[in-house]
Length: 616
Image 1: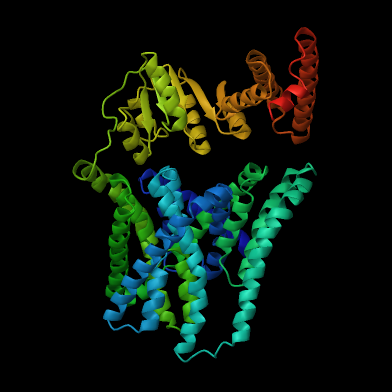
Image 2 (image 1 turned 120 degrees about the vertical axis):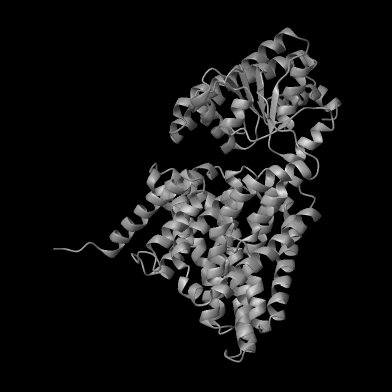
């Protein structure tokens, strides 16, 4: 009988464990991460022993973190990233230095050598990007101040992993077990690092877009998917070649492509692979927990685990106070950054390889980090159910939450700059609405101006019911996050079919996604203001105000009709471009004819001489 290959058997084991453990964990309210970790423990060397090559699987599964950072980079345009430079290098460096210094000092106080204490402190100061970003996404915290601060700190940690790894050979040399590293070798490594980063930036600016355009024109979607994966794999390989963080390189590539027209297509192609590999990563983390070391020194393991978690919680909570984060968000912020991180595995394994400390010490630290990642989702659940209700009552300004059934005919989800204008206009007409938003800073600001806004996430079904979605007539969907917007629409369509939706669309892709879900009342967020600016330009050029207004209205009507003609061909790029080009030419021809007719009916006072006289 022919035996099945090992990769097929292992794939069956991983998928079976995930399919069983993750839904069970979700059913118990523990979250998907706990399910993946439990699945890894169950099939690993200390469980059923179905899989033994843990390290190989962990190296492969780390690519899930790389894909996640690439997708995060796609969401950050370079301008927005530049605006975050201060929290990244300010609060990020403060968190790293404070946590590392305290952890190092405590270890040295217990008689541990300074080299081991330093590496342990630096490694344990890192946090899990995968767990934290997934929790931030699930809780919809990214638009909030705590979400932005947490992301900035996590990004700085990914950057900080590079000098930490570069420091290890020097520490090993000081321990007397490594040969001296020559200045020429260090200079060569530095040149390679700068060259690779420069190649990524230059290639992203000059080469990637034409290459992706050429591939897209081939008309084969599977090749575009392959090119998307090739892009991330190639950049990760380059970064690995010079000893840098693969995740950092992928993030940098994502930022460079954030303004590309292929951004959404790249996200759609890579998202399924990211989810699968992240799940595999957490399974591998569960398998990597060395329960032999734990059973050999259970007291020491427990002391390291509780010690570094407790110290980081105190430091990060104090940092949250200095950053003046909202009171209600500080406990979750501290828990998200307190657990150990994926890069700690790399740091401790590299430290053992450089003879900074022994393999047993590395196993002990890796076990503590893995257990902290296992405890982190449980701590979040405890914070949600035990701490936050009491915390909201006794600490700081309490945000008003929906506790009684609302009966207003209108619900406004999102009360930023877009939702506020709608709310003010309705209020001026004597109409009241139930307003929801989840940004604590914004709520406190608008409340100071006399607005009543409830604190809550509109993607929660129970909150929508309490807000009166079952009896309301209209939902104004004014949130600025595209994924959240789509999630709310799906939730409303399934549970409140009578509710009419008036939605805000960020761009054409978002507009199409809303139309796919049957939402017909959709407005692009900058369309009307752009028309107003165009009217002003025409008036400054000398066109009479009423003619400028008519021109803008005709353009508006034509644009809406063109969108309706383009919508059926949204998935056929070549046909979509053809329809758009034909529509533009028709509009230009129509406008040219109207200008000729107007010129014949009015005095010749709007001509080139008149424009020159105005100095334009």
